[in-house]
Amino acid sequence: MPPLPVLLRTERLTLRRFAAHDAELVVALHGDPEVMHFIGTGRPAPRDTVLERTLPEFLSWPGRPGEPAAALGVWAAQAAATGEFVGWFELRPATPGREEAELGYRLCRAAWGRGYATEGARAVVEGAFGGPAGPVVRRITATTMTVNRRSRRVLEKAGLHYVRTFFEEWPDYIEGAEHGDAEYAVTYAEWAAARR
Ligand SMILES: CC(C)(COP(=O)(O)OP(=O)(O)OC[C@H]1O[C@@H](n2cnc3c(N)ncnc32)[C@H](O)[C@@H]1OP(=O)(O)O)[C@@H](O)C(=O)NCCC(=O)NCCS
Image (cartoon, rainbow, N blue to C red; front, side):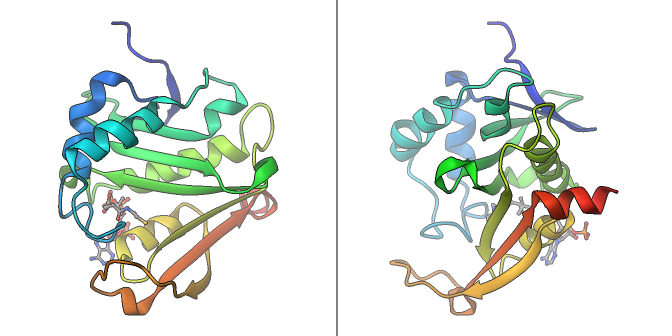
């Protein structure tokens, strides 16, 4: 099978769409309790959920290199040097009309602490705001549990700024939930001004 085209590239990572043959990689990533500690129910996702819901959604994203559609969706991230799967990044439309999109990421435990999340998140922001067709969204947002300090640091280093802390009722208690969730954002105008 020919390799899938690289849609985004950083110094050390390549980001491409998912393929059916990535199934076991996603099952393992979403099945790791440490990775899932601050996400959803705070527990690993069952294999069936990943295969029946998550992966089909991942596979539904189109986009050829250079097209605006390539700047939104979900990407599998690989180490450029070795091809090793390191996790995924996402930028999902959050409002109609592509006004806002929400940034997210999930990396394999073995890939943490090497700056990959920061590098990939910056590339995703750059792809959405600085592509050849101009900005594909006006504002990028992200939310994370307040206690997820690694993720908050990544958002800050990717150029997003803290907006607010908010509290929602979640069906499952996760340690630290009493501190709420933190929202971050950056507009195209802010991103462009920071690069001047
Ligand atoms: C969040 C996540 C993507 C970070 O990945 P990563 O590759 O370790 O991130 P980076 O190496 O780019 O940067 C992490 C930053 O957090 C800092 N950090 C690491 N552990 C930390 C801790 N316990 N407390 C505070 N900061 C911490 C690092 O020092 C680094 O900042 P620095 O460059 O200023 O030193 C990764 O931990 C992950 O996938 N977690 C599980 C999924 C998840 O929580 N996703 C986000 C949901 S909102």
